[in-house]
Image (cartoon, rainbow, N blue to C red; front, top):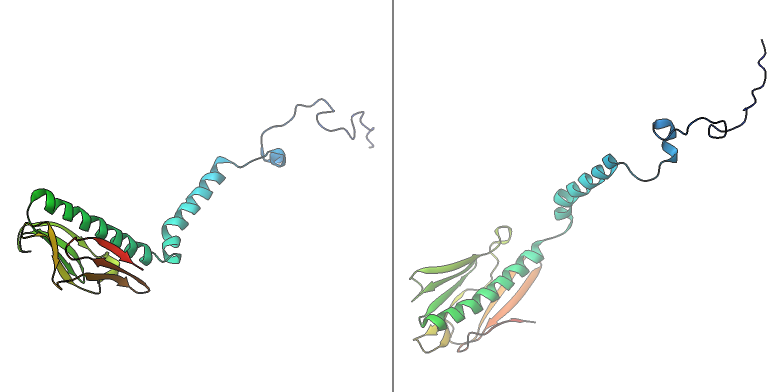
Length: 174
C-alpha cells in the first residue's frame, strides 16, 4: 500500500499549523541560559573549593604573622596612651609566645594579652619588658636601657619592630 504524498510534506511544524513546543527535552536545544540547578551546583562546587582547597594552596603564615605584628603595634600604642591617661605604670612583657600587659611592676592585674597565632607559636625571636609611664614621669623604659628590637618571625617571614626608650614609640624597621 502506497501513501499519497501529504500536502504539508517538507514543512516545519509551525508552517504546518501545529503549535510550537516550548517545553520538554526534545526542544532543549532552542533554550538559552542555565537552569537553576546548574547554577546552584557551580556555586556549591566553588564554595567547597574556596573552603577546603584554597587554604592549602595559599600559604597563610605570612598574613597571620603580619596581622599579629599590626595588632602588636596597635595595642602597644593603646597601652602607652592608657598609662598616660590613668597616670599609672603599665608593664609590657614580651616573650617568645606572645605579649602581655599588666599594671604596676608586671605582677599586677593583667590588662590584656596577645598570644602568637596558634599555628605559628613561638613567633617572637626576642624577649624583654617595656614599662610605660615609669615612675609617673611619662617616660618609657626598657629592660635594656635603650631601644628594644622585637622580631616577629616564623618560617620564611620576619619583621622587626623597634621600641624607643623614653618615648615608647614603636615602628617597623626595614
